[in-house]
Length: 209
Image (cartoon, rainbow, N blue to C red; front, side, top):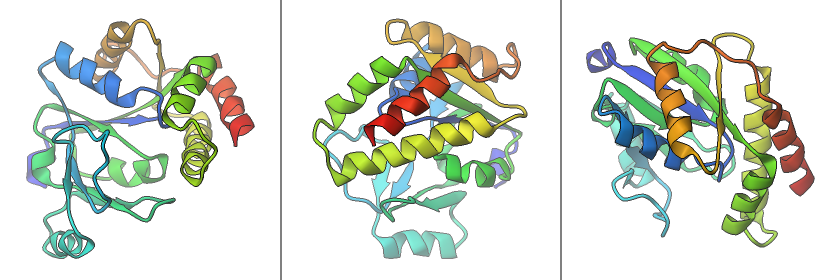
């Protein structure tokens, strides 16, 4: 764990299909001090998984890593039961970006990083609805689970009152959003209040459930 003491963890919280991966990839392109956190999972690989983002383990192998003290953190997904976790080598840069479930933020904040920054990502509700329905066009158990997670994520974000940051993912200007994220992490921008898009996004998610 000593390898984490001079590093910053940047947690990005937001619904599925809101553009977290695209934003993090843009940040990495703009600033060499940033990297995305990789990790392991016990779920099956998906056709749209980003190359190199996950190591796919059996549940037994993951449990063995935990028992041997080789895991920084792990979490059980609340709707699928799959395990996700990380090891020290998964945090390679000064600033490390992680797509994070709201349910595990507290545990991540307790880890021995030099600094932890939590940013909630929101966007124009109509844009998000289009992105979500493009990914999950049919009413299904999978889409219902993602919507439940979205509602939980937005409600949690709206409830934060201290040292919390917000970004609006502008569909046509990802570079600007990435630059704003870099400014937040480097301390050039202070905590922000929820933008109007956040409450509207919650209403949109609830209407789709």
